[in-house]
Length: 352
Image (cartoon, rainbow, N blue to C red; front, side):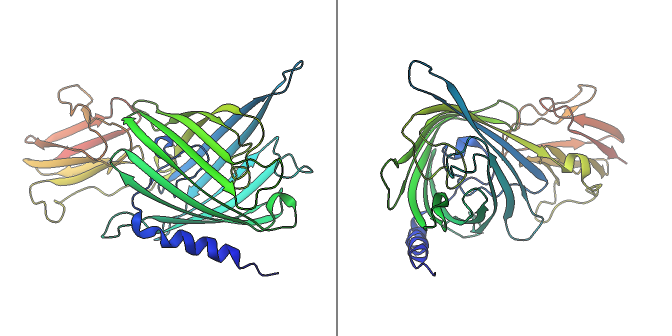
C-alpha cells in the first residue's frame, strides 16, 4: 500500500527551510537536545560512539530501578557529500513487545549545509528498525541565533511499533548555550495520531562539555524509552532520569596516511604557511620551511589546543576553536612541538 502522508510531512518540513540555518556539524551534546539528532553527519576520520542510559523506578512497594540503554556507533563516509552511516542498539525497549532488544541501522545525508552562500541546513535520515520491522524516515532542520539553536523534525514510521500501520510524528527542540562548556536543552515530539496510553515525548537536559577534551555529557530527564527514531517519538507514562556521553575515536590518528609537508605559503597568504589542528592531530605533522618563514596554525577542532615546544622555549597558549596562532622560525634546526591538553598530538618543524 502506498502512503501519501509521508510526502506531506516532508513537504511541510521543506517549506520551513528558508527560515532555518546552522545546526551542529559535530556530535556535541551542547548543540542538540536529548531526543533529536540535530542532523549531525560527523567528521571524516572519526568513529562516533555514544551511550545513553535512562533509569526508571517501579511503583511501591518494590520501587525497582530499571535501565534502558541505547548505544550508537556511526561513521562519516569518505564521500564528497556529507553522509554518515550508523546503528543504534537498545535493550529493554518497548517499541515491540516481542523484541526487547532493538536494532536500528540508518544513513543520514545533509544536502544543504551552512556556508558557501547557503542560508539553510537540512538533514535527511533513512533507516530500518529491526524490532518493529519498519522502514523509518526523518527530516531535520534548524536555525542558530546567537547562542540559541532551534530544531524541527518530521518523521515517518512505515510500521510504527510493529503495529502493521504507518505512523507519523512531528516535533521540535532547542539548545541555549550559557557558556563554552554549558548549555540547556529541551525537545517535544508527538505522534500525529496518538492512541490511548501514548504520551507526547519530551526531554530536557543539562549539556556539559568536558573541558579540553572532545567528550560531552548530558544529564537528562525525559519520558522516552530508547534513542531510536521510534523510541524517541512516543512518550511513556513514567518520567526517567539518565545521561548520555559522547566518545569520538579519531581513526586518522592511528590509520591516517602520512601527510605531506607544507613547503609553500597557502594561496592568498604569502606571509604564512598554513597548518591545522583537525581531528585531534596536527595536519601536517611534519612541516619543512626555509629560515625566516612563518607558520600559521588554525584550530579546526571543537576543543582548545596549544602549539608548545618540547623544550618549553615557546608556547602558543590556548588556541580556541576557529582561532589561529603564528610563529616565525628564524634559525635552522628541528623544532618538535605538542599540544599541552592532548600530549599525543605531536609534530615537528624542520627549518633549513
